[in-house]
Length: 213
Image (cartoon, rainbow, N blue to C red):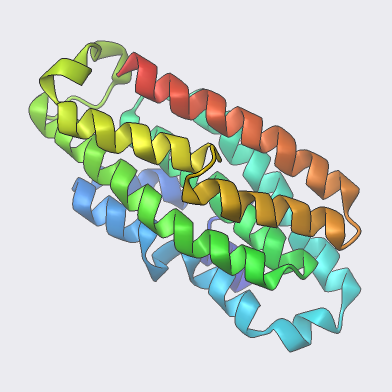
């Protein structure tokens, strides 16, 4: 699990992920959407029979996942760099996945793994359009009114934000809801509560990114 935590940017081994934002945006999209950061989630899901044999191990992983989810969301609220906001958002969403596979809701965790890949790649590539249009400017405080200048990026970002915020009928609604409900179903009401609170914070900082930009 320590390997999974480092690979999937879980607390306290999360600090490398925002710093990995320095590269070109298509690289960021690959890192965040493909198996780079989600490999830890996959490993836990593949080891399901071993994991299910130890309630203590499940509890540990579920708690680390939940703490990472809420910490990533809170840190995302404090960022102004468009790519760092998305980086902390990835950390938070992977916390959800780790929480799901940790408490035994393996199908839900892997489902969120799949849907997240699509909307996160979309958000990063849309951010790339914005960054290129503004000659490599990444501070959202220096943006605004780009809906008319980059309409394609606006629509792509809007759809990605609706998905990651869990608005029905977008994919994030089904997968995130499954993870949060999975925590309740497997007898972890506190993790369920953290999941619900984190979902609210996620909607706040993602819509903040959309409105400011």
